[in-house]
Structures are given as structure tokens and as C-alpha cells.
Length: 78
Image 1 (spheres, rainbow, N blue to C red):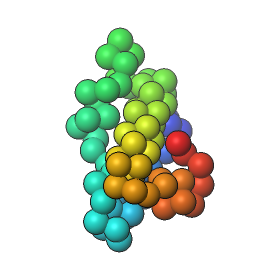
Image 2 (cartoon, rainbow, N blue to C red):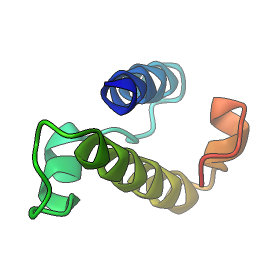
Image 3 (cartoon, one colour):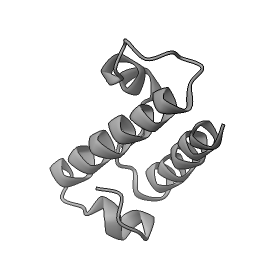
Image 4 (cartoon, rainbow, N blue to C red):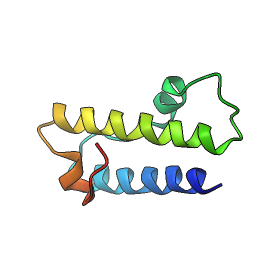
């Protein structure tokens, strides 16, 4: 599934930024709590929803820390 690969790639990118900056951005457990629970966990739609959860959470966390997640990751995600 394309979205599953994209989600885990995003998590890797966020963890690298965390390591480089010291700010908290990625939390797969929180993403799983925020995802639409009615979706089939093995579907591409589920992982698309996880990507939305992760990018929103990372964007808000970055803002709270005084950073722009888009500048940190090098593309618009939030």
C-alpha cells in the first residue's frame, strides 16, 4: 500500500528532525488514537488518515515550539 509506505517515511523524517532539533514531533501512538476508528486498519484509506493525523500533530507541535514544520521538513505538509 502506497499510503502505508508514505506514513512510515513521514515518521522517519519527523524522527530525524526531532533528533536534529530536539523538538517533539512524531508519536505513532497518538496518531493511532486520533485516526478514524471506523476504517479498516489494513486499508490504504486508514494510512491516508494516519498521514493527516501525523502531519497535523507535527504542525501543531512545531508551532508550539516556535517552528514551522513546513520549513523544517522542506515541503508543505501542514
